Length: 369
Image 1 (spheres, rainbow, N blue to C red):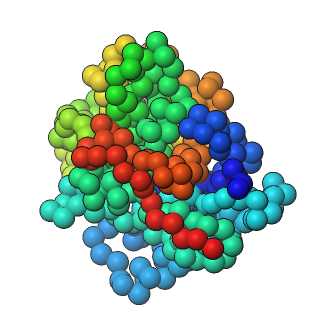
Image 2: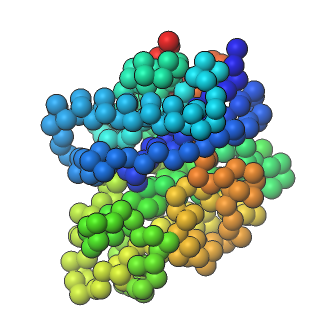
C-alpha cells in the first residue's frame, strides 16, 4: 500500500489552497516530496470574502460554493501531482481541510462548518479523500480547533527543551511543547492576518493584502487603540479556546475606532500588527514562560513588519519552522496529510488538552474510490 499522501489547506485568509505531497511512514517519519500554492480564481475569492464568516448566506449559493470549492481542491491536488510527475494511483489518500465558512464552538449547539465537497475531490481525482476533520472533536465536547498541535508535537517537540509554535494564518494559533513530558497544549491567540488583510482591502480595493507590510510600515502604532483592542475578553479567557473572523471582524474593529475617529488608516494597520504580535507573545509569556524559541509558520512569516513586531515583544528568540526542517508555508497542509494518515491508520487525531474534548477520537470522514 502506498505511503504517499496529499494535504490540502485553505485558511481564513481566503486566498487559495496550499497543497503538499508527503511520504508518511509513521508519526515522526514524514518527508515532504512536493508543494504548490493554488490561488483562488478572482470570482471565487470575492464570493468567499463576501459570504464567509457572516450571519447569512443564500442556500443555493452555499450548495454551489461547496461544489465549486470541491472542484478547486481537486484541481490543486492534480496540479501538484503533475508538477511532481507522480500518478494519482501512487497516492494513498488526500487529507482536505476544506474552507471554513463559519466556526461556532461556543454556540448553544456548538458547530463548525467547512465546505469543499470531498465527494467531488474523490470523483475528480480518483483518490480516496479524508475530510471533515473538525466536527468529530466538537461532537465529544471540543472546540474543533486548533487541530495542528498534535502534528506540531510529532515534528517539532524536543525532549528537555520547551518550545512554542505560532501559526500566523488568518487567525493566529499557538502550540506549547514542554520538554519535560507535560501535556502539549494550544489555542487560538486572536487575529493573525485576517484583520490586516480586511483593513488593507477596505482602503485598497484592488489589492488582496499588505505586501511585505509596506503600508503598515508607513504608520505608527496607536497605544490608546491597542489598549482598547487588547481589552477584549477573549484575550484573557483561559484555554481551551478558539476563534475566527466571525468575532475579530471589521465590525469589531469599527466599534473601537469610534473612540479614535481621526486616526490615519496606516496607523490603524500598524496598530493591528502590534495587536497580533502582542496578543500572541503575551499568551506565550503566560502559558510557557520558559520557552527557548518561538517557531513561526503560516502566511504571516512573509510580513517582515509583523515578524519584527513578534521579535520585539517575544520573551524568547523568534525564528521560523524552517529551522526545524519544514518550510513555514507547508506546515498546515502537511498537518492535514498527516491527519489523513492517522485516520486511515485508526489513530486519534485530536488532543483533548488542546481542544477541551472529553476523549481522543479518530477524526474525519473517508470518501473511498
